[in-house]
Image 1 (spheres, rainbow, N blue to C red):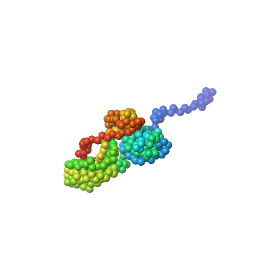
Image 2: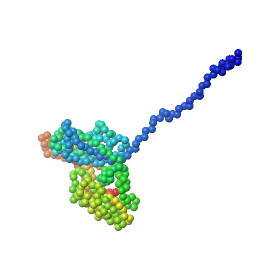
Image 3: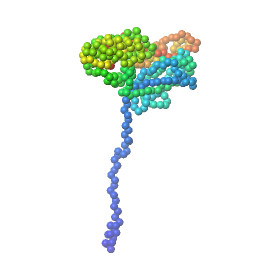
Image 4: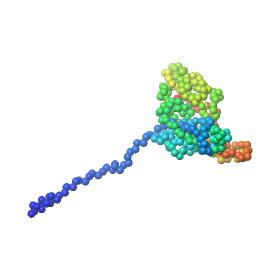
Length: 336
């Protein structure tokens, strides 16, 4: 009997598997998402037609804003919408700038949009109408940019100091003039600014290219980039040829920028009272520092106009500040 009970007890034994090892806490961690690095891009803004009172209006004249240098990731550069009215002379007045409600959101400062847009002109059919125009961005990574675009930005000093050095390094890949032991300048020839025509409010530039022989004399002068000012191009090529360098090993593809740039400017909006006093003076934009805008604001406040029965609203003034002498720190440099 005892034997049967023992056998029954053995038959009822159940094998229990060992407990599973604890799971690693890594299963709770969020998945790693690879974020594309932000890279410097050249960004140009383009506007085509405006909407004025429900009608499509094509501008009569346009001035391209400065190319912006911005660091962008996966998102394309943001678009901007300009609100304005058209004055009797076709100028956009009361300009407001805001980020477009829809579209890409990659950050670009776009400080030159309003100043450049103030120089546009619209047909008489749009006078007095409330208008909007959208500026869309066209961007290209800095390392894929066309050489002419790099030369333009470097010549006009469009980039901030950190990005400027990156642009210069990209330019210097095209020749052996720069870098350690580059030719030291003995004589820098200049252009005569008084003989160079220029559109008001628009900077002009030309980048001269040349080789340097063993005696330090420039050879094969030419122009690699410019805004199309033929008089400035001829003067720049001539000045590059008349410069002299310390004789050493010959160099190729040296460049020097020549520019007629605006040292400072401000765009100010204001109203005029019937008795000629100014009011509601607002700085829309200023470069290269806010002080330019503040000085322009004070100047407009102190100004007086001729009396007019109805006064005026949304007037725009663009104030330029130009240096009297040559204080450019690059005047003694061999160029890019």
